[in-house]
Amino acid sequence: MILANCPTCGSAVPGKFCPQCGTALPEANAAPPAPPAPAASIPPTYQAPAASQPAPAPPAYQPGAFPPPSGYPQQTGYGQPGQAMPTYNTPPVFAPAPQKRSRKGLIWAGVLIFLAAVIGLGLFLVDEYGSTLTGSSSEADKVTGKASPMVIATEVEPESMEPLNEVSTIPTDAPVVYATAQIWAKSGQVVSTGWHLDGKYLDSIKLTLDRDVNGDWVAFNINNTTGELPKGKWRVIMYVDGYDVGTVGEFEVK
Image 1 (cartoon, rainbow, N blue to C red):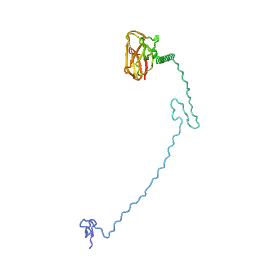
Image 2 (image 1 turned 90 degrees about the horizontal axis):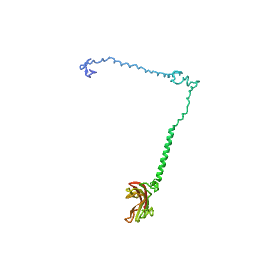
Image 3 (image 1 turned 180 degrees about the vertical axis):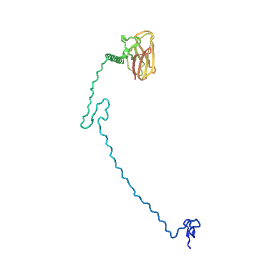
Image 4 (image 1 turned 30 degrees about the horizontal axis):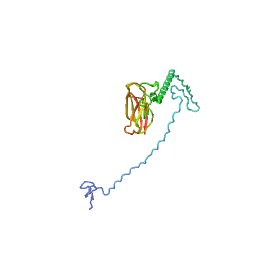
């Protein structure tokens, strides 16, 4: 006897029901269940694209739809065929009226120009002739505290101190060098000279007047005590009471 096996647990079933799990065995002659019918296929559907709509036409131009701004004439049919362009009246152009010059302004301008010319002329004269005028020995310039142009010499007259030989170049073995000038000053005033070599100050010599002098010669000198004077360009400046009177002497030692 062939026993059927339980389709659920696999145990041998002697009857119609499985003694282990109770599952009923199928009938031997029963027809197998029909397979499920396949689902009906629905064909896909497509929707045609919507036809493009034409863009709305712009509104037709209507003259006078917008009122012109205040102050401008009405433009009817501006820019349309057959219509004339509007015309505007251009305001006239006038030349500016000439300005009247003040008479006082012209007078002041003339005065300023005259003053500038006088000042310029004065500066020129001082620059060109200042030292000569300051140290002039003329009668008009013989004023207290003035001096004539300086004379450099190697010998002077012993009594009057007037220079005997004016020089501009001096040898190194010269025994003495004089710086002389005529002086107009009062008793008690101090006349001095500053000696410079190649732009460097070396020494000063002072003389206090013991009487009034009116064009008298005064001599200041340096003695060659070493046997050789320093070479270079010398410059001597004269002062009265410490003020430069514009008297300068120059010489060169070679």
